[in-house]
Image (cartoon, rainbow, N blue to C red; front, side, top):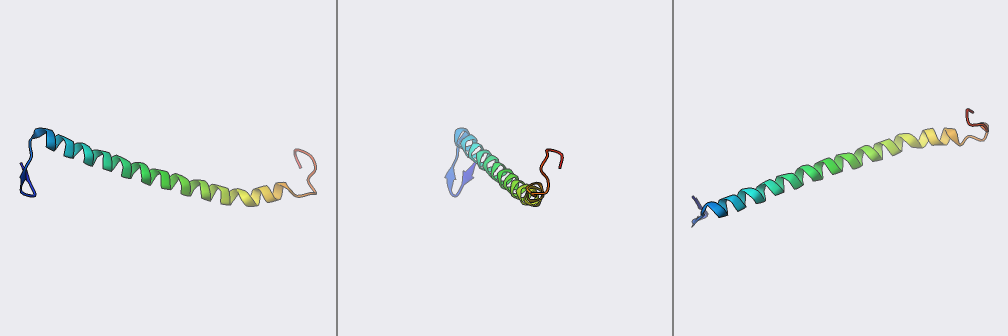
Length: 64
């Protein structure tokens, strides 16, 4: 196999495929991490009004 004018043997082809697989794995991991961070931010944003209600001084007992 020739790539950019240079002949590649089996070991070099395997190395190239392995590097591409690692790159794909890193991209998938990064995408999932970013989505998880977005979900956590969204969850925290939704929790703020609920916590503000629970801090209401009128509610003194554990059940309000």
